[in-house]
Amino acid sequence: MVGKLFSRLDQNQKVLVTCSAIVVAMVGMAYAAVPIYDLFCRVTGYGGTTQIAQYDSSAILDREVTVRFSASNARGFPWEFEPLQNQMTVRVGETALAFYRATNTTDRPVTGVASYNVSPFKVGPYFSKLECFCFTEQTLQPGESMDMPVIFFVDPLMDEEERLDDVTTLTLSYTFWQAGDEDAYETASAMAGTGEAS
Image (tube, rainbow, N blue to C red; front, side, top):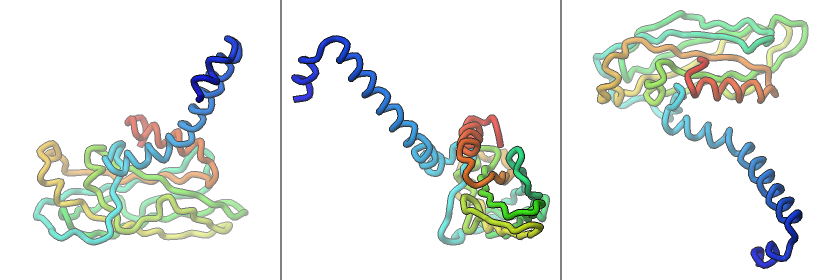
């Protein structure tokens, strides 16, 4: 049916219909790209994307790793943001608790959203969070501070990967963004996925 209708159009109309179809397809792919990329990263750990766990690890190994904590803000975001510990040493499989503190330094309420990653990127699939403040809007009143917990463990399956035998230290990095600044967040997420940002 569509083929018969298309064959009845003159050359200019065919070009117009083809171009319109391409534009509609490109807009659809643009809207689908971010959720599809996010799903891909969560499944594969690509770009240092960590895993979300429902339960504590069932095993704790003797192997230890040092977890470093990093905090930053997107350009122009008006909060002070810092980890409350620089690093901690944990056994693989052991559940640990860390805190980050955010302070609104303005005279108005500000809402932010945090993104995160783990480096080296190859450890991403084995860093599991039980609780996290990431991807949830956080609103701080003028001058207000808030301590935000991260409960995590390093999956014992990491010990079965030869390519991870050299990993003794990893870094958990969070960046706060102005809520509603999706363009900046998506750009940074894409850069993190290619190793250009952390």
